[in-house]
Length: 348
Image 1: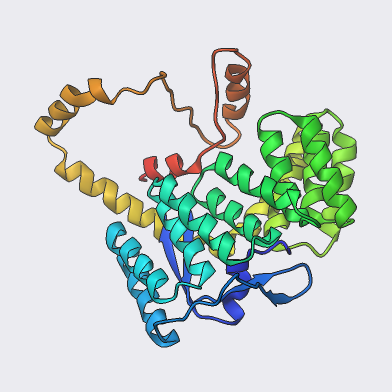
Image 2 (image 1 turned 90 degrees about the vertical axis):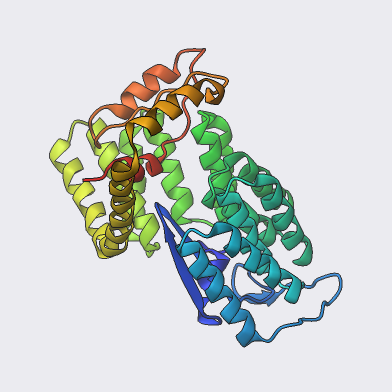
């Protein structure tokens, strides 16, 4: 499967609506049982055909209603509309993928898993379908469930290089560099010069202290015809690599190249941030002393099993180094960076 998701590539065939949440974009569209293979669109073969009970136009309007409900934070209504869509078009696997993602974003992982596995079953259990399920899990922030689906995809014949890179990144996050290297080797064996696989290899080289080798690979990726997101990540990785070599001016130039690629999408991010700021101001106006007192009284029953602390700060301020120092302690566990806290906490 190519570097773009099925959801992104199907836009040539069907209309779609984008729901913007802090740090997340959700695509609802009028979908079909189509899956992207390495070279072309191909129809997946379901075990049995199921009759559609709704026209494409009516299904399109149903998705618009679901999108609008989600935008207004009427999540239950939005999910209910998607459930209705699955009943009216029971053979539409990608509707189930979208519904699974919606459940996952509301932390109902059991329902998300049910929808995703049903979607995979409708799609014939092909490798691309398991990979799509894994991507949806990444979108709602459940890496362990994503890993399980990516492993299923990788266990089938001819897995895509993207799936192997996803697994390499998950292993890297847990500091399993040898296992990550194995997945990168498999990805490059399947697709020589795969940009994301090369980026992963360069990152591993940097983590292993081989910064010159990492820089060489990164510059090769930048000279290739890679997609914009991979190019963006490569510039940031090059900046980090040059920084490790004490080439600070060059590192800053690389970071500025990455920021230049981000700038065209700044308007959408700014709109999301303005919405977050509006909600923060509303909270400031409505939270009274009595509300705070009630929160304090109920806090005892809300304490997590393990004590937690939020580590945050500006870029290049040393938060990553401090996180790594803390993570080295045997009784401390640090998760992957979460930008959602930044979106919710920064109001000015």
